[in-house]
Image (cartoon, rainbow, N blue to C red; front, side, top):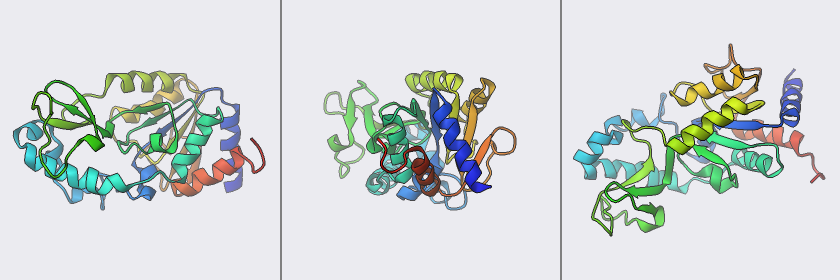
Length: 251
């Protein structure tokens, strides 16, 4: 039965002329990045208010101390895993149009994907809240917090979404466009709880897409939305799917 599910998933992807991947925290857990929610999530150890926009501007040092610890001391060491690499190979081989991700870890880009809609932004990019100048991680002196813009002296902020901010327009538009046009959607490592991103698989399904879900346990999508449920770790499931999509000895 399990083998048939993998075969069905591989065939649906091969048959599709427009396949999109929709990824969440579960794809990056095996790269050493913990989820935010749940028993062992980051919000069980840190106060969520430190990532509220109003708090950030009022107490920038306190906020930046937590940001540095979570995202740059810890997250910054993470590397793409097998699941990320398979998605990158799928795009390279013409089997994947885009990745829509709720993650901010930059791992899809590091794996080699070119078309990535980062629904919640990217921790490797930063922006001045004053003059809007852009920075990379390498530009920032994390020993001198909070970082300030060298042009205008404005407070520098990671270019990911804080509580109280809207979704980046380009990512929002691109994500909803691709979700509404895809023939297959590969849902990897997301439980479907965070709005508005969680609506994307529903949009895909409404427009006739086959929904292939990869998760450790059933999600909000599994009972009513998912067509093919592949249960297991993202690295193992995507690794096996990759072997079926790219048999050894083929280009």
